[in-house]
Amino acid sequence: MLLWALGVIVFMVGATVAFNLAARSPAPASAANGAAAASQGPAVGEPNAADGVSPDPGALPESSTSTGASAASPTKAGKPSAGGPSATATAIDKPRLEVPASPKASVTTLPKSVERAPAISGKGPKEGTAKGKLTPGFPTHALPIPDGAYIVGSSVVTQKRNVQAASNFRTGMSTEKVLAFYESAAAKQGWLATCGTAADGAKNITIGYGKDTVVATVRTAATGATFVAAFGRFVVGK
Figure 1 (cartoon, rainbow, N blue to C red):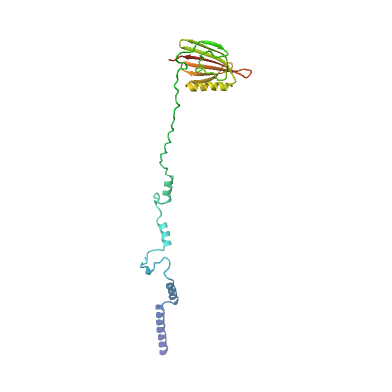
Figure 2: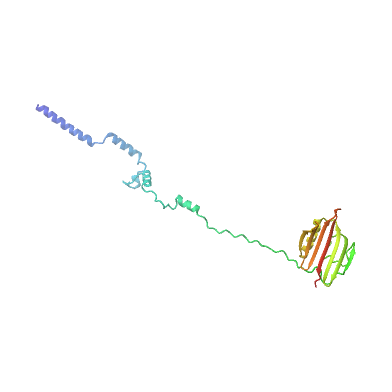
């Protein structure tokens, strides 16, 4: 019995020593993993000891930090950043206070005025009547007659400084051309011209200025010829 008890004691002591040695020595798998990690270098996101930067125990990986920062610190409402979308939209929507350039003033020139001299000045024409021609000294500059017209009759009457002249003639010109002829004569002397229609349908034109007036009435015959009756009143100027 004594020998059996001693054997049991020796076995228990040996088992205790073997258990303590096994707990103090590193596991083979852990040692192998550590060797593999050392051969591959530092992990991504971890500072390298060779760079001289000591790792921050409280720092998180980059992805975790950015995600956590976005979730932990939301942007305050009503205070957009200077370079954010709100600032860009405000800069685009803000109207520009620009003063439009004033258009260049157009230069307006008045037509040259024509010096209106009396139609008849100095010594007035002689009185007279004639058929088929103009009376001697007929004032054609005051009462113009188209070139090529056939004179039916003419007359000049004077009373002191007042002169009345009349002529009837036939022309191959159309009614419109006869009216244009007297309009042109009025423009050359700076006179006014007014066209109208008589009661019987004849066309007439009145030209003149001040005390000088000429009225020409134009009719078209059945043969197609144009007959004109021109009459003028003038005051002889000095």
